[in-house]
Image (cartoon, rainbow, N blue to C red):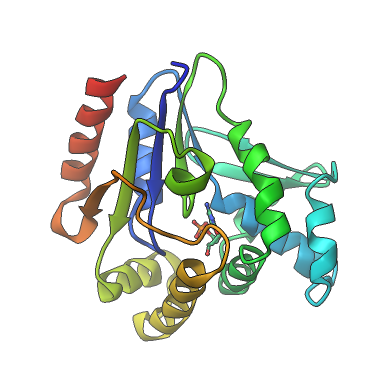
Length: 218
Ligand code: DC
């Protein structure tokens, strides 16, 4: 299990989380880490502490002990000052702030080792995000890149969040743009990645084909 890492990258609402949730339920001895939770958690703290315009202070927050990210089978959770704040990190203002935090190079550099530390001896890891196959675990034996048409992704996100697709799509395009155009470790298709157009499969089909691939490799 030493090198048992599967990376799952892709843009907003490409279907990463739901695929990871399903896979990790079926794979004993495997964990799932949504790396976006680090950026969302930092965004939460920045807004909470009024540090929106103090970018220089953001990297210092990483070593503070008042927050942590924990892996669970159904979610990756964010804890702040001893409380589980996960339900508060999935909304439009955190989406936007997280994408800004993700552009901060010292923050990204510091987070890489925190994220790698979630790969535990004797356990497999499914790492989900935007730079898992390109920067965090570039040696992973299986790298996935999920994508789907803009409109399909916006509809999914609107349904999840109970919002209108027309409103969601402009925020989504903005976030896709900043995530893929940032200078350091942007969202890219990892070399050798298996590219899956998630609008061409049902969830069951996708789960089955990726599960089979994982079982054949590890
Ligand atoms: O996957 P997500 O929507 O929870 O990610 C939130 C933001 O975090 C995303 O817009 C960009 C950033 N992110 C990143 O830059 N690198 C990652 N590996 C994961 C997320």
